[in-house]
Image (tube, rainbow, N blue to C red; front, side, top):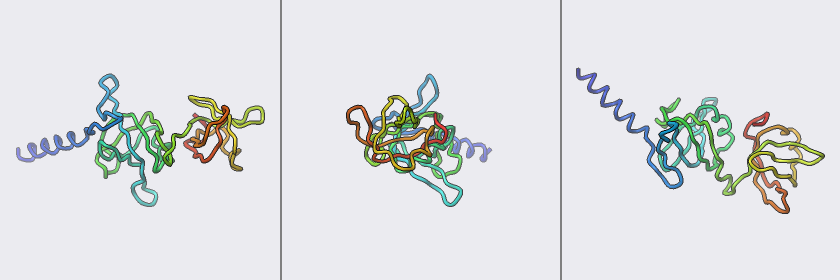
Length: 175
């Protein structure tokens, strides 16, 4: 009887701890239609050695990232992102909360808004194809090895072209 009451008390405390606190720019509340939660914050690595994972530190607390997009998020340490997915326990605590990420938006890398897309060579020129299609200039020497990869690019747009200042690979082999 006592162990049942204690188990219910612990279960209630865990369930309460998994509800994110609303914060500016992201409600942290589940979307009633989909059951998804949206949280915004900065990504950092946690763990040691081969056992590492990404944690989003946001207004609603700390959330371990897992699910189908976790691999891409692992390439965004230090970036500010908004993630959407199913709230649940973390696969490896701490933290105790996790989000199985199904979608994300990169808000800032190094304080700047990046452009995201697939890197493509067309008619002798490099292009970033995604929500917007931009011709790229100022191409680093190693760009050719990333053709077809999903990347983020930070730089200035001038006369319809994006001058590459920095970039990162999110996923090999495109979208």
